Length: 511
Picture 1 (cartoon, rainbow, N blue to C red):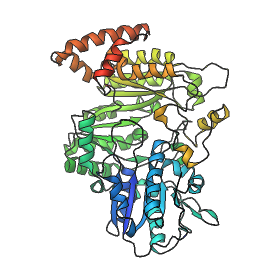
Picture 2 (cartoon, rainbow, N blue to C red):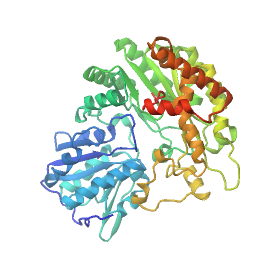
Picture 3 (cartoon, rainbow, N blue to C red):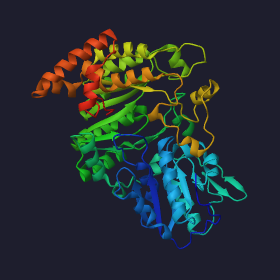
């Protein structure tokens, strides 16, 4: 990469602006989830600096919004997970360097937190804010504004001509010590409008983050590494208050809890549901649950969950084969998945169950679970409750996890720089050496077409019954898809090709 040589002086005294950049996270077309990561770290700085929060997917003229303000900028912050978001972040860093190489570039997010020293080796990065940035980033800004490098700022790593300096890690903080996310610093209404236009969403929906971490030990999940299996949740009273505020401010129909494990604490969930009901909020909500947790909830709490407006739970089932569940340290069984499906059915709650195929196995050996095995199990789930959506993902090893180390052991090439990580993108599915192209195409067909038509959820059932003249076409596709799903024959998929020609979006959104 052609990059102007980085500066060696961190003196930003007298500067009044901070630019925070949230790059596009993935190739192609995806639903926009708000860039709350940059909003949360900006909250303590509001009123002290002129803040420019820029989301590549939402902010008009996003490049100019950052590049035109560099002369008076303390630093440019870039948030990133592994893959395409790094690529877009590096592109922005290159442009910042070309215009004003004096401006320090600070990276944060999952990937920089897992590989801070490696990130600082890149000329696209000067400083890494490791882990929770709510306190660390304002302290980094304070050091730069005082004319010095972030020496002694716990939770930070930074580059110097003499070498990379790694400060001690910052202890994990209770999420209740954070300031409320400043939604007003993000272009919330524009994000909603884009989702309504591009994704044909008929409701106004945004995300809310109510907890952090997860007590699970899943071997594919970076949360366990980053938060050391520590879970902390906002107090129920605060969740009720802040959700009520954003619902009224943005006239929302639904709130998607972006927590890794919203249902980790049953008493908290109970109190939140009671608060939603007592407030008369009348809101729909979606949240994620572990399969070994949700079906163990007390019946009276499950009633409250339904009554308070829970539209759907997202269950990370991943596998139905005991050897694979042990390999990934899931802590759940196939029977847990089925029990959770029955709970959804019995209490009138929709579900989205996600599965993963292509977990690593030694060269020359057969997989312990194939995509065909998953499809047969998914049929059992669908037969229990048709309003459960299912999604199969191809496994892409996430750095810092035990399964990533196993994948490298079994021959997966390991990126060695920030620039190489930029091409490591789960959306391309190139990293999986255990799932071939033909199997990937079958997964795409099943996810986006055959199962949504073969086992119609409540939305699809409306189309089949009340879709005007289109309902006859839907009914024909339903019959064809059902026959294919039952026979497991997906060859010569003429109906799938026609569907892709005339319809670009999937019928199987996550939430």
